[in-house]
Image (cartoon, rainbow, N blue to C red; front, side, top):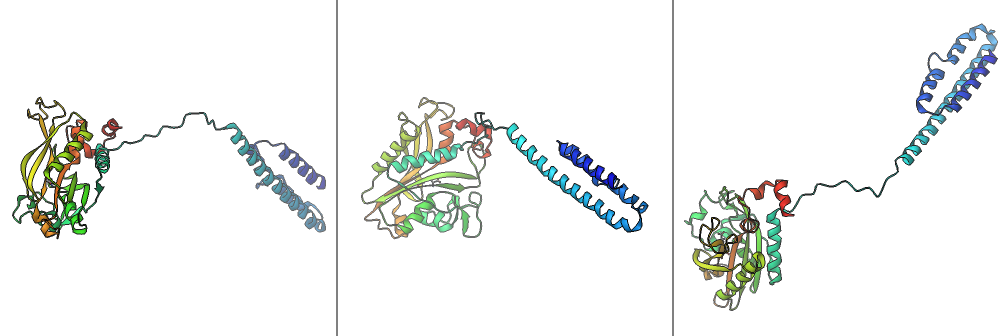
Length: 339
Ligand code: DAH
């Protein structure tokens, strides 16, 4: 029996040393350690030995079994290490291979135009001011000299949140915010989001405007026309003329509407300008002294001009986008055309 044990140990050692794969090791492991292993068989034969020799020999079998177990564990970890190393050397990273292309989006035309407008005005010495999307009636209407019964206040145009609280319908609110907190000279633009209950191919319930306000001593209508002309040429091209037409806004006096030469037909008349040769861009005027008075700005000393226009509208004109809703859908096929 002693020889049998020794034979088993030698055989197992030799076999395990020669194993080269983890799979093979696994199957031999269950052979030697499992329930039907030759060591278990040997244990069963203990009873054939004289009683006094049994404990001693049983111990020997157990020691042999434990040593074998240890050997298998070591073999296992060295085979795993080897497998890891070969996987590294087999999968050499080829740094000359082209990378995976990422599907990048593109800036929405509104953002593009917004940034262009800011750049043009900043280059003319304007600061960029910000107001609030959620406003009160004072900043959206009262301070802008808009009477209580003005149709723009109507629930059908304005989104009211509460009695006196609303989503601003125009960036003109920022004029008030700025004049409340600063004495002239003031020279700002205020781009931002506005809200009106309107939704069709040329109106969106959330849209964008840019407002301008210049207040100082001796500001005249000629200054307004000059800045508008410069702005239009810088944004749309040197050949694009602008003009102003008399109009009415509560917070400016006199007030005007700004037109630019039709970008499609350059003044000849087409379907875009409905045969007019001109396209409306926004509103403008000289700040009404009533507005100054409400805000504690000396209307005898100071004068100012203001104008406002739709950023979305500018984007549509500039990029010949037929429907405003396209600007808000964020369809990647649409956006990619503006890269
Ligand atoms: N807030 C006006 C609107 O939404 C646009 C406007 C007109 C702004 C005249 C002005 C202005 O600053 O002077 O229709």
